[in-house]
Amino acid sequence: MLFQVGGQGTRPTFFEMAAAQQLPASLRAALTYSIGVLALRRPFLHKVLDYEDEFFALLMLVLESHSLRTTDASFSESLYGLRRRAVKIKAQKDDALLNSGDRLHHSGLEKRQKVLSVAFLVVLPYFKSKLHSIYNKEREARLQASLWGHGEDSLDNLDYITGGEDVVVSTGTSNADRSIRIHLMKRIQKIVGACYPWIHASCEGLSFAYQMLYLLDATGFYSHGLHALNIQVCRATGQELMDTSSRISKIRNQERERLRGPPWLKAVQGALLSCTYTVLDYAQTGLIAAVFFFKVAKEGIPLPPDKTLCPLCSQKRANPSAVTVSGFVFCYACIFKYVSQYKRCPVTLMPATVDHIRRLFHDM
Image 1 (spheres, rainbow, N blue to C red):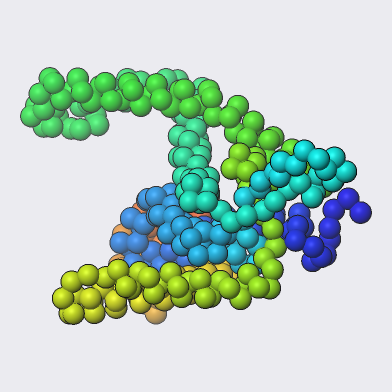
Image 2: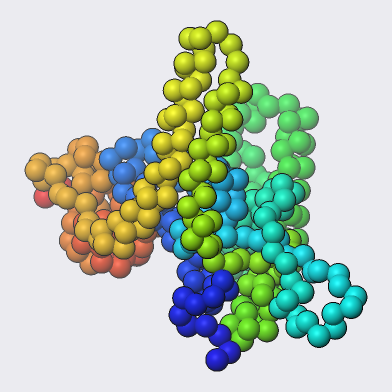
């Protein structure tokens, strides 16, 4: 057969690699959904959603660094019992009869490869997400300009944006600096809007080519990132899985031995380390449970006992508005923000848009 469909050998199947690659995206969707639900009752959590890219990148930076340090695998690869191995070609001059598989030698990851792996797993996806966001804004701006004409006057009109009093207080220098910043941001958005589609298409095409070659057993590298780092992903042997716990214990004992200071300070540092270890040990289980919750928890928010309260903010309805697809009434600001973000009714989860919102002149 051209590719494996079972669990034989050290080479992972295409489906194992695909599942490991898609797990971070599923985790991000699960965390975003969970935080979005909690933010309905705890508005301060909206700040986390405002910095979603940074929050998730920081979380994955901690998890990926810990996983690569202790198991020589990424966070998702360790879940499937996979390990990363550096590929080294044996230089043997007198054995021309050896096949290509015998000339490859796998060894543990070097420190440089672990650092670069974190960069490929966390840093590059973060910048890609930010570029995608900038590209979407530029595309929306172009679409709006094609429909309504260029809105440069409204953007540059400081009286409208900041108010008349602010303009009187501000100096000419501050206005000039702001104009330069706006002009620079527009230029960056235009550059990203022109270059990003080509960069994105090239990366996706290259990834598809590597995945197809891996599926046909024509290469041992599942992605161009692994090829650039000269790393292959292999199944962990039984001995490696058993040695993982002893390696983690050894690393943690060494970290505890490096603690310095008076006894009380060492006790505090030891307690903090123990808490950190506990969080890291159960992070995988907790995040996988979040994915499960994301898949099965599809119930809308409950209605408050008092019919005059908004189900979203649990306060007296201000500017009551109804969603025509379901008929439930909310505050106009609450339902407009929710529908704009989630495209559905918060109670019934029926698909909805802002066009389905109707203002009510009498709160029934």
